[in-house]
Amino acid sequence: MSSGILAMMLGISTLLGALGLLALLWGHRTGQFEDHHKFIDGALYDGEEELKDAILMEQKRKEAKEHPRKEKREDKRVMPD
Image (cartoon, rainbow, N blue to C red; front, side):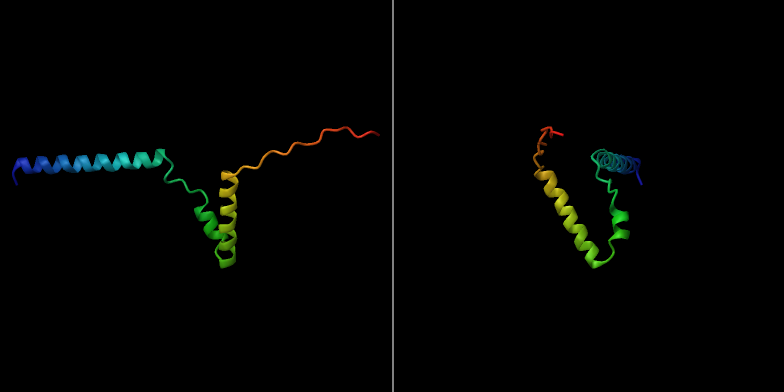
């Protein structure tokens, strides 16, 4: 092999390694690898009914985030003794 080809292969492999490292750092920074409930939910909801319940709960959470409830004002009247 000539030294020119070897230098080109070394440069390309270094560039690809740097791109992979940047992708990994970007994924970590944006939270792509954070799934706190994956293994716990896998152990808890292993039956068909439990999985259906988990899906319904997740849909309710998403709806609650999309449409937050208006705060109810409490009646602050003082009751006579």
